[in-house]
Amino acid sequence: MRVCRVRVGEDISYAAIDGLSDDLEITDESVVAFIDGYPFGEWTPRGTVARAREVTLLAPVIPSKVIGIGKNYRDHAAEMGGEVPADPLMFLKPSTAVIGPGDAIRLPWQSEDVHHEGELALVIGRLCRDVPAERAAEVIFGFTCANDVSARDLQRTDGQWTRAKGFDTFCPLGPWIETEFDWTDARLTCAVNGEVRQDSNVGDVVVGVPDLIAAVSAVMTLVPGDVILTGTPAGVGPIRGGDSVTVRIEGLGSLTNPVVDGG
Image 1: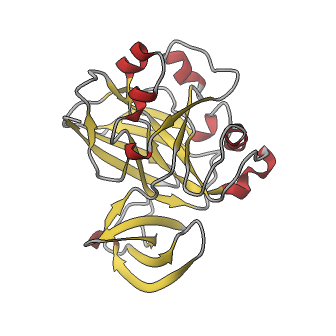
Image 2: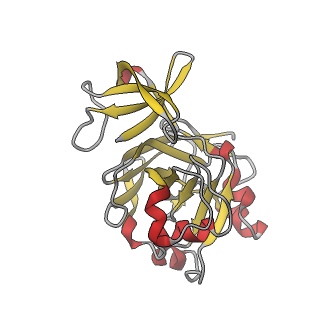
C-alpha cells in the first residue's frame, strides 16, 4: 500500500494512492482514497476518493525526529575524504526541516555551499526501544524518498552537523510511504535540472536497515512516524537558486523540489 498525506482546501488527511503509471508517476487515472485516523495506529476507510491531481501531496509524515546516518556508503565516505565509521554515525534533523513534494528548498544566507543528498528513508510504525536486528521488520511501517540537504561549508567549520543539516526545508520527504518495499535492491538516483549526479543502489549501504534500526533504537526510543535516513551514495554536489532536484528510487517513486534563495 502507498500511504500519502494530502491537503484538500483547508483539510489535511491521510489517504492511499493508487492508479499510478508504470514508473510510479501520477496520471489522470490516479486516485486517492481518504482514511480516517492515523495510519500508524487504528484507521478506517472514509469511503470517499478524489483524483490525485486535484489534491496537494504533502510530506507523508511529520516525525518527532529524523535520524540521519552519515558515511554509510563507501564511495561517499571516500569522496568526503574519510573512512566508513566503525559504528553508524548518527545525527538529528529537526521536524521543522521536513517539507513535501514540490515544496521549495530555501538556501540560507549563512551558507554558500549547500548540497543535495538523495537517500532512502524508512518510517517507524510502532513505539520501540532496543530492537534486535532480527526483529527490525516488525517496527517498520514503510519507506520513502528523502533529500538530506546539507550546508557543506558549515558542516566543515562547525565540526558537528546540527546547523549544517537542520535548516528549515532541509529534509524533503515523499511523495508517499510504500509499505511493501525491498530495500536490498533498488536503484537510487538524484538529478539536478535533469542531470543525474548520484546513481547507486540502496542495497549498497555498509550497514543495512535491520542493523541501523538496532543501533538507533539502542540509543533512543523510536515513536510511530519517526524517520531514519539510511545514508547517501557518492555524487553529492551543490545546488543553486533556480535548480530543480529530483530523488528517484525504483519501486518508491520520485521526489522533486525546486531550490530558491533566501532561506
